[in-house]
Image (cartoon, rainbow, N blue to C red; front, side):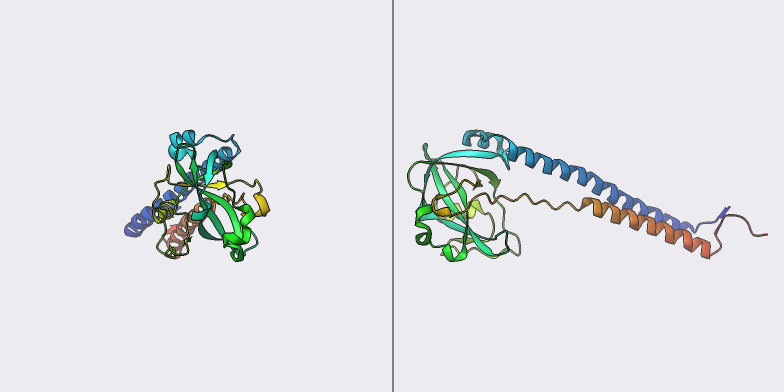
Length: 239
């Protein structure tokens, strides 16, 4: 076998090959991290509900935990987050402040309503008054991105789960910068319709890893083919 590699080309290919392989193995590590995260989320959602004090104590670890709150809804201060229902039809998530017995305030996503039922007067039966309890999923707020439409603070419509933004409009201090997404327990009259928590994690790390490895293999193949075409790589010397 003869092999007389071009030095400069070989160094460049070796560096690029190391980068491509490194990216592939990094994506495999990300895959394991993502699978662990998904498993943790499902484990949190399956666990027994915790109290507000426990959720606050857990901090970021309380994400996706079920929590039970006790207090009164301030229905006059509803806010709305634009969303898309399971059937692809636009809906509003009804966000209502809940004041606990010790005067702490949390935002509760009571569920979704059709856009034509945004006005509370069209679903008065669901405007729960007095002391109540609600169990839901503890969700941290989401900061608006560069392409997120600005909120319509006059109509109290947001386009992202912005607990802090909603609280500022109401001039309230929240016990935690979260929105508790109510479970599917039916509300009087059927609206809002709870149980809207979606666990959606993009998990394309395996595809990315395969892509990087295929690119590495392709680069190596081109390198070998190039040297063969130049007579610098052969299985045996010519007679």
